[in-house]
Length: 627
Ligand code: ADP
Ligand code: MG
Image 1 (cartoon, rainbow, N blue to C red):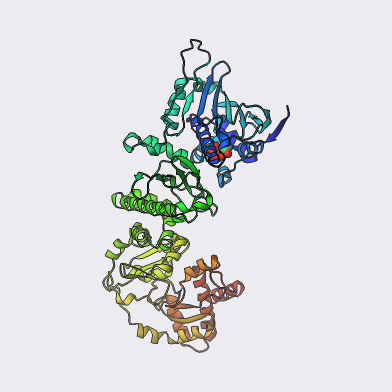
Image 2: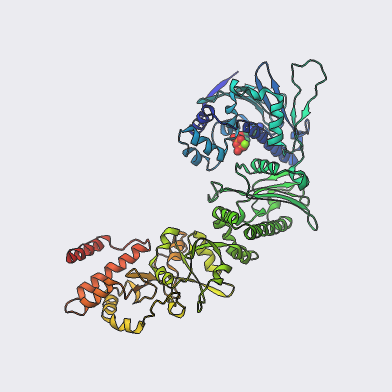
């Protein structure tokens, strides 16, 4: 017999060290993980057998069998699923294959209390065996193949793979139970754990009669209900069972935020059991993230990679859809542009949005939690979904200058001031930064609410959706501020722009001259109170932040639109420049000030400045003059 030694991938070794050395209170989850894997392996074979029935002919009844051997101190978990080849054992039981998981391993600190928390959030799958076993042996034979292999490890650094034998396909996992967790050699404990964690598993989980009782009356015992959870009626399912199913089907460890279970009958017949997670999955924004909804046909698992089943903006959903109408031998090609799937998708989308709407009305606080996790994703639907886009916009909530909490658009509209026609917003990369934008100053002073939009997706939906309820969306960094038209909250003295303009004509003329090829215009601002200058986009030009986003997505040419520099007539610096500007020989001073203030305005926008060396020289000269 050949036996080959392999080192664990470094991340796995690190993980195993924590798993074996930390005191983890919920050791029983190893059984959930192993039974879950066994059930997945059966699902995959059942699907493969649709086109290759010979694979299961000799043994068509899928099951998971547990047996306890008190003398050997072993617990064995056996399945007749798809099995693993030698290479698959290396790939699956020696590395961490799940995408994004290595990030999570990076979060491990070596402080066991903290690490256990991290592990609790991500799960360690098969490796959780080492919480209860000091040696694990996996014998597996891939369906349709003759050879079997034995994987064996004590969880420290390396494992071996040797030739083995197994009468038929499937996987057997022998756990040599540690003394400290001897409870897992007790049939009652096993019964309880399966009832709690694996009742929803759709195939029978059988406990083999203990081998040392010789009375001959003992019979194998099925521990779970062994029918697909979604086929049972809602009244028979406990919240705990739903949660356990969610953990199994969604590779999740949190409590779901919403559970949607229904059977749809009519033109089409399908069941759905779909969850909205309570936490943001770590790979939500990773581009290679697959949909986490599983497609079943008449209780047979078909695929967990069916893009047609849900739109991308609902990619946070987890769970299953089980269709009665699709043929069992449905192929990948058939799933594309399939009319049945399209109808299921439409129904599913409506059901999910309906649920979110309901929760947004019934429980604002809970809804905001959902929004923190998935709002940025759901908002993609505003522009991607022609049918539901308006509905999504209506339930969407936003941060605003009016409070620290969220507001929806209807509530914003109710707070609009007399004479205010537009819904004002500012976009940017980060809420804290845009809150401080100079362009907001005048709106703040007049008590006019501005939406603070800091998700990248905001710029996209805004370019499609121009109005809500007859009110146009308008960026505060674009066009004229129209602030004079609106009633002030307090009596901020309304200034006469004309006289400001006359007063500042020398400064403005000098600025225009100095910045001739750098800005579109220089004008007096009524949106500034504290800052000397700011940049805005002209009415018909692309909003400043949108241009940045488009550039990042390479959807915008290199040539930037020219901006308008607005100056604050009441700022001390501008007033000083006006005084000095009226004296002889001030043109150099004014042109240097213009260049300096333009660079400042760019810095505030988070934009690079053209010539940092010239900027710092000018700055130094100015400071020297001031001292
Ligand atoms: P996950 O289930 O999240 O993929 P696990 O650590 O639980 O991660 O399992 C890793 C992989 O090992 C599985 O994806 C599967 O390919 C393989 N595997 C584990 N248990 C079995 C089994 N009983 N039969 C066949 N393959 C298995
Ligand atoms: Mg698993």
